[in-house]
Length: 162
Ligand code: ADP
Image (cartoon, rainbow, N blue to C red; front, side, top):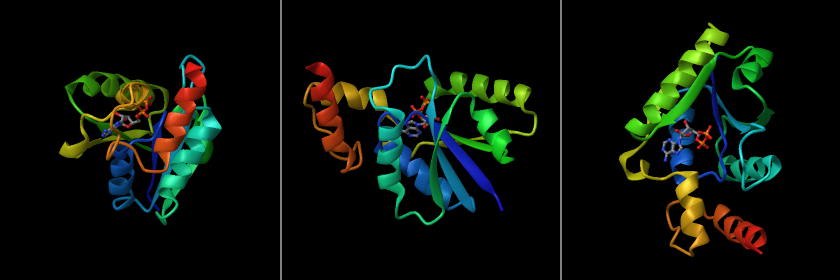
């Protein structure tokens, strides 16, 4: 059984992430979306909130599971005896970061393979960072984030900007 792990912050999950999840789920027997928590990152949503949002978005995908992990992604893979990481690639700017990460992971865990999936052209400009910026200034979010995420994002920004 081929199991792919798609790790990320998903802060919040966007239409671009969902498109990648959907496409990976057609290639692999099972997909684990791994909601990561890295201590030095500044998240808008808590790990459990990010997990819940992703979970709600993928509940209709039969072969997609969501999990959380604190620390290195490869430690998660090792503990579950898995070896495939999928990452999304939007533009050239993503490339260097993803290549360094893939090579570092390979160095630390030689069994691991990182698969990069190109963004669908319609979604290549979508990032969680841009979404938060747009939401902060009441910009239109239609099509950029899943419908269930929109009210949660607006509410969360209200809370943090209070
Ligand atoms: P991280 O903080 O680990 O980069 P993100 O949640 O920002 O996590 O992204 C997780 C993965 O999804 C990364 O590989 C990123 O390049 C990819 N990704 C993000 N947005 C898109 C998009 N619009 N299209 C395709 N891939 C994307």
